[in-house]
Length: 237
Image (cartoon, rainbow, N blue to C red):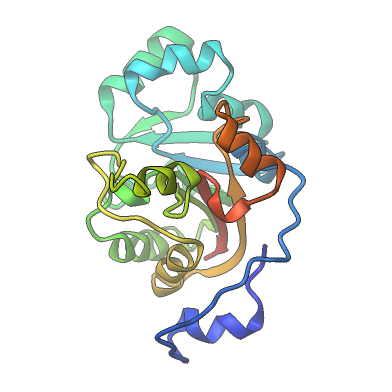
């Protein structure tokens, strides 16, 4: 889904409304599977995968069930390197799966010698931004550092309107990862990117693999995409 021109002024801050209604009725996606969307976006592209390791205790399970994102990106992209601050997880992957092109470091501080030697299509941040204390500042500094070498960004985050979340809200319960700082909607996540200096191109709505639960299957089949699990936004530097 692309934002209509009517909304671009609001995203940039040139126009204001206290009750803006953002319509997503024209959504037409071939797939709502999160991994499939990311795989298709990165097909034959040169990418940097930030936060590539995932939780160490989940790596074996995800590789066994072919849902570990970094391995899928490596297999489908032209070139893929991974960067993560979790040294223990990166060392585990290197030792047990022999995956090359993995580096430990903070993208805002580390040497860019592995990046600046060539041009990259995308940097991917999968379910990271909600863990960052100041997302606009983080994305802005990254924008300034990587702009000479990277064309675009793919940013994913949990959807505040997720059907799973709404189901709990009806019972006066907030279900959340205890390390999350923020909830994002399609508009607010796009706003964060624009404020950080990026040009938003498309919003994709995704479920985490094919939903297992009946109420999620209903949402998936009826294309109630605004209640999807995760948001995927592509933007240019």
